[in-house]
Length: 430
Image (cartoon, rainbow, N blue to C red; front, side, top):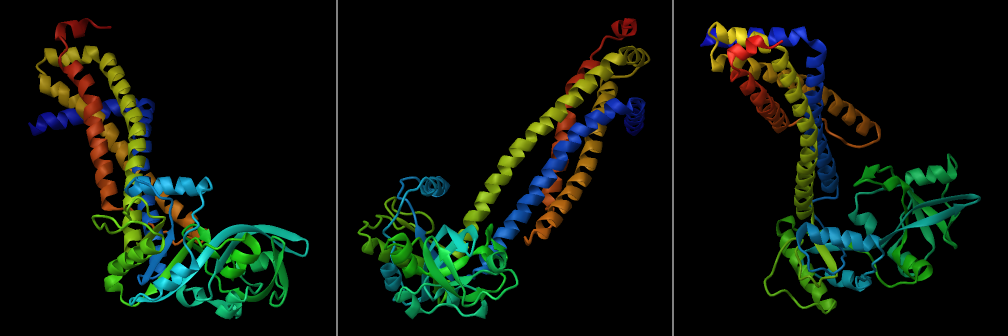
């Protein structure tokens, strides 16, 4: 049996060597699909680690409360609908600084800050740019890990007094002032003048946002002098005991439902689930990491489904090549069968040929996938992203399984056709 298999292998290998261009094109189709599998898994791991590390950078002792458009949908469908509604301009005006003050009275809440984030036109001298303005309470600097490099952050007294003061991110400072000192100078946000009192230390990009391009002003000043509103968009709460973060999150939900006159749910549900009437969402950092992990898994599966299409195309290429090979070697098949080659001998010969094509494509695809994944990580890091170069074991397993299955599947029918040929008719073929 071993001798028969070895002979079939030698015949198959020689046949492929005799038609290098045709074999190379078939290998290329498989290679592209397998390389794509490696890249998808590697990029998925890179993105996952990048975002999870950035979420962790906020600290495990943080709970976020943000506005949400009420919806009867659940899970990811609810989050998608909420994002769409907010992008379309839906306004939720019920979350206020009074809510934050009430939350600060909860036993496990150490402190909170409330915020509004908008994109505004910024003017200095004749220079005008649009950038993100983050209006916050003064407690922001005590809760967030950002630090002031020069000058100072504004005080709560300045916030309550509607002071027109601003703290610049390091990058927007350079854009507006270059190497010149910005402290004491003034910029305009819309038509309101703000005096610069501080410059933040460089923070980099977090969650796809460049914090160094942000400008920070008191939230009450934004509410009263620029936007003319009384609400905020989100709050961040620093808690004392991380072990009861879920309980604290539920306490915040109960309190906000009371403040917003929302009926409590009949069956208490934890996490991102809500009553459907909630106009807010409360999320612990652990819940945020779990949800993002699930989203990343779904995206990876979606991309793999798309990659499968390219593998099918490569498989069809193998099918066509094997049909051509069978037709070209019909007389040879007839001769082999006439001198005693069995059905299984012929089957093995052509199955080995198709498997060799996919094996070569798989190996080359894995190598190219690793190289491209590594180049992606280098490119991402050059843009300041903390991107890890990881190719998980499951990527190799999936790549090998796919290449093996496709080799057998798309090679089986031509091999069966060859093995079932009548030797007399095959010998007559020209």
